[in-house]
Image 1 (cartoon, rainbow, N blue to C red):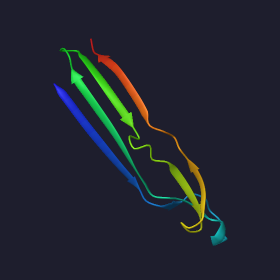
Image 2: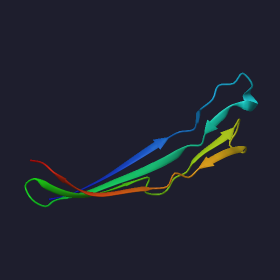
Image 3: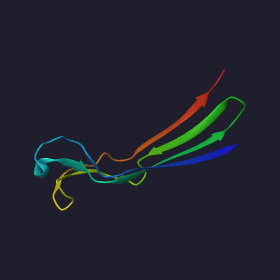
Length: 88
């Protein structure tokens, strides 16, 4: 049969470096990641699947001290995996 799954993961803003000076503290912006999986059981022991990680291409972004001071951004992109699984 056909099976579909969606995973939504939210991470709130949080401190990533320790510093005694508040103006030097680096934080991550909050972000939401969406991952999906679609699979279809072809036969008794054979499944075809498609997985997509970070569906919305959400970047990872940092700021210093407060959100009005962006520091860095990394765009990791989405990942697609297609395949066949078998068991014997």
